[in-house]
Length: 363
Length: 237
Ligand SMILES: Nc1ncnc2c1ncn2[C@@H]1O[C@H](COP(=O)(O)OP(=O)(O)OP(=O)(O)O)[C@@H](O)[C@H]1O
Ligand SMILES: [Mg+2]
Image (cartoon, rainbow over the protein chains, first blue to last red):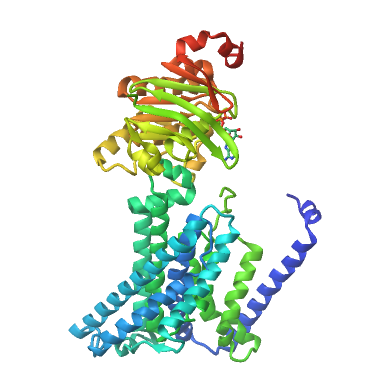
């Protein structure tokens, strides 16, 4: 289309949004330029920001998958997903503390028999937490969402918000409102050094590695198993899936179970990293993971993975890369602002997300 | 006892009384057709049989077992496969995966592979496009895929809802040929809903004429074809 025609077609809001977009880009570029010119950070710093971002991003990705799986199959945002994450992490606290008391989380180095036992214990904690979260997710679906299957879309959405509060306060009632610190797995504080000052902490390796394995497992499950095929079919057309002999209710329950399991696993990884669990802990990660799912294109599995990693990296590098160059004091405190600014910008400029297709109108 | 028996069925959409006491029977090995004007209740009848809709009154039996106690997915396992109106293929799944989805209840891997081969033989176009997403097929190809997907369920009774809709005349003929072959060579019992009443009465053994939710006429297809009422209303008099 020739430029003159395009210009005439422009709507005033397009112009305003264009200016907003351009100024955001200009500010980011200017800030980055200033930071890089000042030479405050060297390669090893950027590398450690990147690794920290990937670590945090892996956790976001695991949670985001739960949002995306449920959205894909029910076209509904499960706002209680953050609490499903919390339920796993907080319940597993007791198992972790008990096993730690038995010395199962103590070792001098990972390469020893004791080190292998530490890793085995972490796997056990992940599996246990996944199981708990999975059960909570399935019960939630059965009790709160399934009876509303035929209702207008706003109704399950409001129910989900209610379910989120219900679970939060149930967890508070069960586990109290105090902070429960996970046992320190000191062997994971060691660093893997590569020379030249580059290094990765062992807990980052564990988090990134576990998340990677879980995501591969999910893809294999969805693409390669009969249940995965049923999930894809139900996501596309529930009635047609029933006509193939697929048990739609069971398939939806399985989807909640899988999403819940990933959230529970993420809960343990989060607790290993930050050590503190509390009934409210799922709120911010849940919101961030929702942002990640939207970034990647909600309903899209690779999109949720990429969205999570991308958000983690943007949050970790962004403050040092461009906020600091703008002369903002203690920029790291503003990383939540970066995440949610990104959410708003994506919703304005590309509501279907990075990998998203146009969401089909067929409900 | 007939293979499939529908007795006095009343089906509603909310307050809309769509089926007003439909009774019909299909014997093993038959092709039975259901014809009638738009909105007569043909699709509703098939949906009631396959369990997508629950009637308020009446009964549906397959070889004497009560189908109204079974959810839709169990009815498929019992051998009733419904190829719905408007194709309803899985747009983002590949052609191959669509066919595999049709066989999702089956455990006999060898049988499934053989049936997939049979579907590809019947519709060579689908083999060429097996890696393509279902949604990128042409309308006619999608119709072939919908029928092929139905066959993958190894039906004893196949419910076909307007299989010739939107197809070029040469393909329509081909589809009716396939219906004949499925019935003749593989012994699949078929309940066929069609707009194309002449072609449907041509392949069918018996027929029912539906009018606003009730059965108006029934009989051997050859008789219906020469019935003056049918000729005037459906065969372009
Ligand atoms: N989902 C629905 N909600 C309300 N009414 C419906 C619904 N589906 C069908 N109906 C009504 O039920 C009646 C029967 O519809 P049905 O789809 O069975 O007709 P049909 O014989 O298959 O017609 P066609 O040849 O146009 O496919 C029609 O009056 C239609 O308006
Ligand atoms: Mg119809």
